[in-house]
Image 1: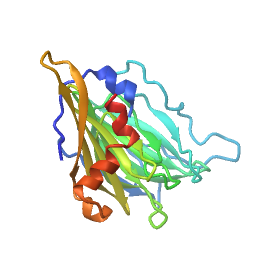
Image 2 (image 1 turned 30 degrees about the vertical axis):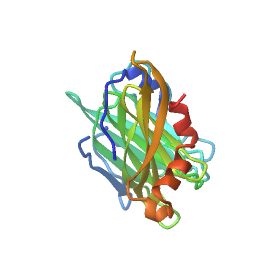
Image 3 (image 1 turned 90 degrees about the vertical axis):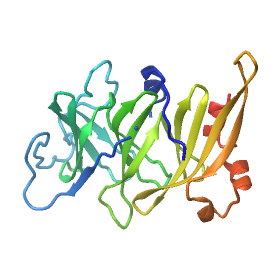
Length: 257
């Protein structure tokens, strides 16, 4: 699957919001005594009507070199909140996310030990199943950002590290696929389609969007072709059928304008 990154300004990444050594994260459910240590604040539980955390809401980070500590709130029915804290020095940042239930009781702690992206975690329902995923930016490399994705299911209510995605934008297709738009060169894109297998991300196909140019180098149009990332057999599609299906997805159309 094409994943070669090409130069692009940092402003494009921030605007589209939401890359490749491996970063291992940890997801630890809470049991027994509260955890202590750098970046972890004991939580005793909030009384009804009280805020679950004294951290400010996550929002615009401005020009901060390291995203500020803040509180994320899920938009699904779980009522979970996420205390986001950063620690470390000399360019080595540890991002710790403490998961709180609706009363403010700590239920889980997640840690990414090497993060350097200039943006903070966010929550979004990536597969349209009604439950938010937690997305933690890991690193920025030229045009694209590498993200760790944590997911929970009805069978596994705790969040588990499902894998990593790399691109400028992460979207959700109408069919429930997770869509990642990655820039590979000037006017060239790889639009990747993923699915969740329980709590693990699985690649399906990539729509490779490449420009056509005239003799002066002016882009005159685009060509889209779908390549198999291991998902064609699962989808029951031939390569031509997959190209017809995925090259018409809105996320592909946006980069072909």
